[in-house]
Image (tube, rainbow, N blue to C red; front, side):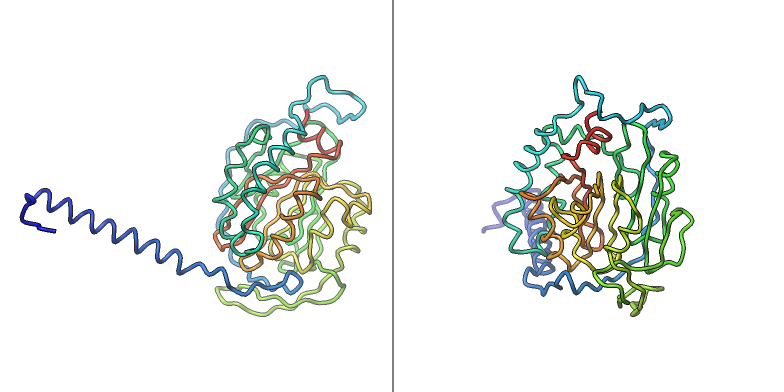
Length: 328
């Protein structure tokens, strides 16, 4: 290119164009170098979790909610005009989510890497955008009940910081809270708390845990998942949270439509599930069958700061759950 035919301003523009182009190409190269789709993925039944310190939770301004003013939950009372169309929720979810996800089912780590950026658009689908989900803390969501009855919450892998749970307890006064954790000895929020990890066997489990910025091996007691759930003596769990360091078991075996919980007559209404980086197989194992074998749709797809994935799930099929959280 003959630079002499340009005046000084034109030469400056050409130089800026080259600099910006070089910067953009460099950024793209770094992006593709960092992501390796051929990384070895740890099987779901061999999970070793590295726990990171949580960021300080920021309290979100919550909408007005007066639990005591809610009417009793009554399935016998027919709703003249349900707030949401459940069939439309299912149709919109299936139509949006699975065409976007199909290409990632052979690449589980790619599913984690792209989970938020690819699926966030589905929250705006018909009827799904009308589901009244409230963020109560950083990446913690809830649908507040629309009628008054007993409420239960179960958390597998209680974290050290429990501000979100405290806010739920404040808004829903009769919320009974059950929790487990192999990392902390006690919790001031959970009235029913066990210092154990949860797994397929009653034994001990080794995990890599971050303590004071250093990864250390920690052995913790582990309780069998079936034993723990049966001991709760619950037929319905309103809110279930499964955090990355809950223990070791494949939770989809318990949560699917014909899974262990269903066979025990136990219903889950809403839940938040998070898996850590490196466990794309476990995430794909749960997400993929939802196309044909699930009572849930998920919203708020999130890629965590550490490279894992998280989402909010709501039961759109069980009559007690839909009346309490969706239709009223």
